[in-house]
Length: 294
Ligand SMILES: [Zn+2]
Image (cartoon, rainbow, N blue to C red; front, side):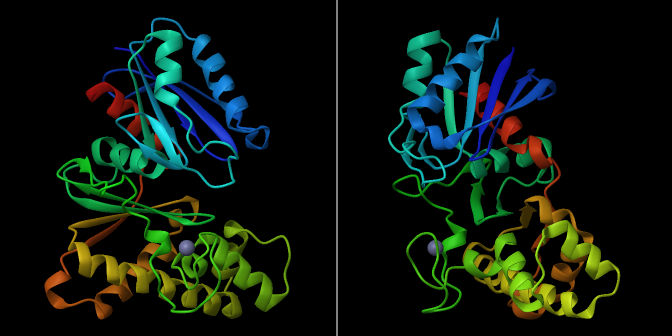
């Protein structure tokens, strides 16, 4: 079986050709050019698929909330204008007659980690990805828990500071306004008046012994812990997979493992924290797996 997987993000589309064993045979990346709008993006996807032959299944992982039965975008932010309402599955199947599945990007990454990565052997777990915001996925007995309207797992928008900072969702005090990678970068820029800051630079300073940076990072890690504590008490998971580029820093995972237990009830303390293992390939592999099983 040959599966073509596309992972559509706000800046890039990753394209992978994957075999039945979940091995990536071929991979490339093209810019999304999201500002051109949803219709242009859909046409681009149709053209990309047309470049491949002998494809048995197509698996799409995409930013935005997805109705997986219809293969349609329920809601996408203005990161991809005009993506809301796009009937991805219908458009692809009408054109190519190849069975197609569509899933949200964090859900796809969670399924990737479940079957090929950090969560192998654990069929019920939570997945969080840290970046511009905080994405979440709930895996229950090997499947995504979706809620009534396919939008469960918006961990970035649980409120950790009532009446706090404004969030992109329109709310105030959301978890991602305090605990995302963007929030850390913003804090460092504000407090140290440094420009040209990114996650890697912050951890280079920290590893060089910069105590100002360490204090900011530790406060940010406390914000991460606050959200994890609520999630652990709600879901009682065996495992939490932490993804997003910044989570590859060992300082973060070590700090969380050491400090989190102090904040959770003893009967929840069996929970394990692990770093995501598939990095950029999680979405592709998850989308391929979903397509394979459909
Ligand atoms: Zn929010």
